[in-house]
Amino acid sequence: MGIFTSNPLFEMLKKDHAKVKELFDQFEKATDRRTRARLVQETLLELDVHATLEERLIYPAIREEIDAEDLMDEALEEHHVAHTLMNELKRMSPGDDRYDAKFTVLGENIKHHVKEEEGSMFPEAEKADLNWEELAQQAMERKEALKARKSGSRAKGKSARAKAGRKSRAPQLRKAA
Image 1 (cartoon, rainbow, N blue to C red):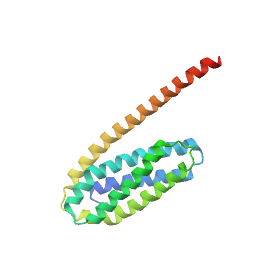
Image 2 (tube, one colour):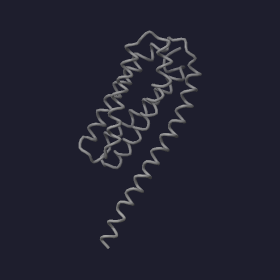
Image 3 (spheres, one colour):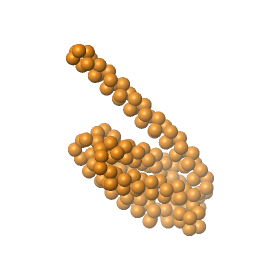
Image 4 (cartoon, one colour):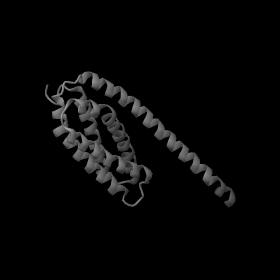
């Protein structure tokens, strides 16, 4: 079995990696704040879903089958750093100082993580006696559910913020009239 050619789980993960790398590249090329903000939000959603899948399903399955505790622990620590940056970005607005810099650092962190995952963890894990098709199927099902849930909660958050913004402006408009 050649890596990324017949392992359905690694094919899926590699596609996720390529998509996120492309989003980071688009961010670097974008010049207007609105486009950059949209790219940040899309990237954060993709990373959130991907990291959740790896942390809750994929890494535990791999960890049970390979003797590479240091490799697995390092991957989780890289996720921790990414989550920290992602959470800070979620609390910021695109005009904040260091917003672009923080997203750029997140991209560098993710690119390093992907290189290690694809170069070390995946080849080591592929030797494991796992039912890759079943694990890939579980991952795809969870991925769809996570995307739907996280997309829905993001839309609810935007709607609530928009309503709150309208409510807070309404008294000001009445006072001015």
